[in-house]
Image (cartoon, rainbow, N blue to C red; front, side):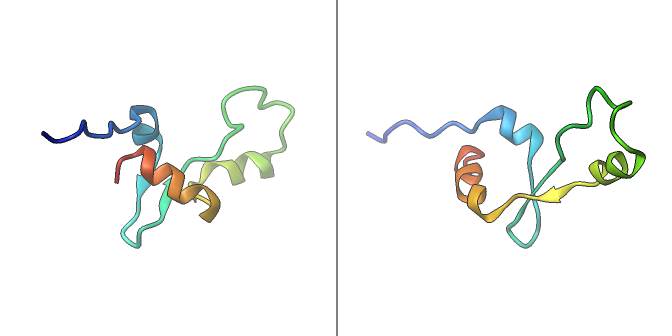
Length: 66
């Protein structure tokens, strides 16, 4: 009898996207509220997606069950 399969973390799957080279893309934080106190330059930098750091990569891939 096989053991139970590991379930993927559905919240992580909705927020993270794997790239073709094996990295993981994520959106930046701090873009949802209190935007009047942030400079336009800072808000512009928060628009683009970035890659996950190598320290978090293994843990997030495991939670995404990849």
